[in-house]
Amino acid sequence: MACIFCQIVSGRIPSDIVYQDEEVIAFRDIKPQAPVHLIIIPRKHILSLAHLSEVDSALVGRMVAIANQLAKKEGAAQNGYRLVINCGEQGGQLVPHLHMHLLGGRGLSDTLG
Ligand code: AMP
Ligand code: ZN
Image 1 (cartoon, protein in one colour):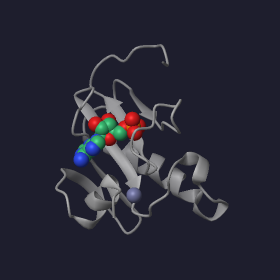
Image 2 (image 1 turned 30 degrees about the vertical axis):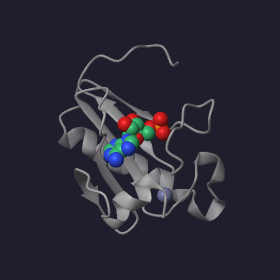
Image 3 (image 1 turned 30 degrees about the horizontal axis):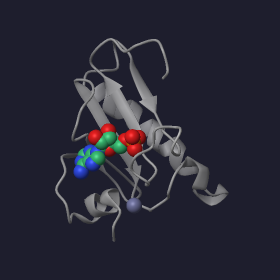
């Protein structure tokens, strides 16, 4: 099992998990780019947004709903936050397991790469 996020799901590598249920887990990014920087992932290994099958597409809605709850819990909701899903090489995706970034707690640039 080479996938680093699958290893976080299985507990083989440690992470600072802030949320988990039967389908989704969320943990703190190891190299945070904002005071609040969480990674939200499906437990299931899905390579990227481009590899999301119709059957699994509802997962992304769940990930957004969980991110919204976590933004509130982390105190980032009131002033605003950003959800990002990088997809593929040119989309800036480094870890090949579908994930959403929740960024907040500071003013973020109004440019998108
Ligand atoms: P991306 O460029 O969208 O693939 O982002 C991958 C993110 O995963 C980066 O922000 C990394 O800092 C983060 N990351 C990589 N390895 C770990 C890890 N072991 N624990 C927490 N976050 C990680
Ligand atoms: Zn994986």
